[in-house]
Length: 134
Figure 1: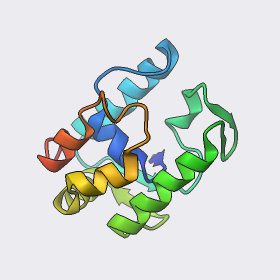
Figure 2: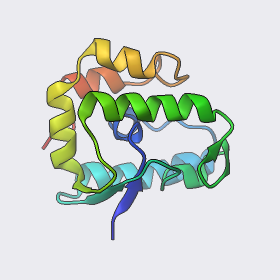
Figure 3: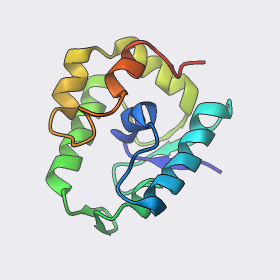
Figure 4: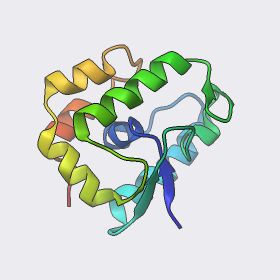
């Protein structure tokens, strides 16, 4: 079974460090991120809509609807554009390896600059140093 992820969450899963919107979100995110980072060969299904992580987010208003919809769609569009992503299945670690090889601090700032987590997370450091590439 695949974990369903939207494009920009490929970046978030690399920067995640145990902080989140509320306890339910943190518990769910921690479980999903553990699977992605620590279980080799984990398959993801890339979607251009709400995903597994959105399921516990207090900002989710409905299917493909977030209270920050415009911002979320912009993050996804820029992630797709920079990394040439398609709505299909990928092996998470393989895809992360490809993204991390292309990512620069400038690209990440362009995608994520107005994300509330960007200034306090380790996204840029982890991605640009390839920290979660096995």
